[in-house]
Length: 164
Image (cartoon, rainbow, N blue to C red):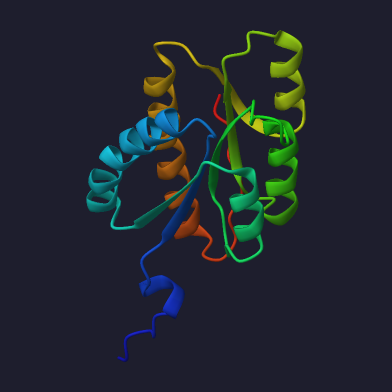
């Protein structure tokens, strides 16, 4: 009996694209370094590819937004200098990539800002404190695993996840 032919989607390695937007160059490098430290292990364990793209400028992200074919996860700082806020950027990213899971982080302790972000599509709003990087990495690991499973079950149809 002949073996069933495999669809090309079934044999390809899932690619998970992650974007970081943080205008503070030091914190951007720190967060990106922490995320990169997880990526190698995640790629080995899940047999997938995780692409991390980091931006320190709203303009750079906006310039590249149309050419990035997919964004599965976005980590966005709320305060982005004199330019757009993280809320504005989240709305823009979700307009292009509605399946994207967005995590906003900020030094702000304003509950109205936090709630506004959550009401407009943010998966999480993380306070920038001494535990923030660990929280962001834990969220990253959870999201990548859930997105990987979703891509295995439904190749080509990705949906954002909400952590409970």
